[in-house]
Image (cartoon, rainbow, N blue to C red; front, side):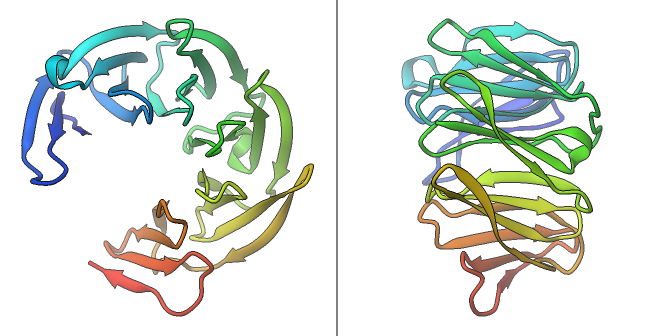
Length: 244
């Protein structure tokens, strides 16, 4: 599935890469989307601040199931928890709202920051859905919440770095952070604490804009402003395999 600035949303066949269906969202621009791992639904965040939920099942492909607006601010990131109990939404107003899917997408938690940043918005659920991590104050702090009651569990102070994206690794043990200096920082969950593991400098030649970890936790793909994607061994052993 893809969204574009032309206000059109496309659903693609993943095998043939042909468009199965498409629909429009008049007078609004779709910015981010996330799909459920449990049922055929997709949540799309819009520039207006609306969150719209669509049914992707064959008989209802593209049918609007629900919509809600909490803040009139663009949606910069959103993600379903792997167990499909929550939808977390990061607004450009530097507020995060947690919606309960079981309660019909009703908000159950709101997170505000005393020193918000205006450029970097990223959040990630752990594979077991027990934790939610997000970029917080000044983009040089990371907060990690327990989803059983959304109380603060961990706080990482990264003074000296600016975090642009974060992601839990599929192994369920690591939290990986990307900084604006094209550095990957690895933190590991160990018993009742999270500890710094390692950092890798210069994963792309120019500013690294995004990264993704393969589902089998063997590779990390990094894309840089130079227009090259580099694929690394997850443990950063050996050389990268660039792809233009």
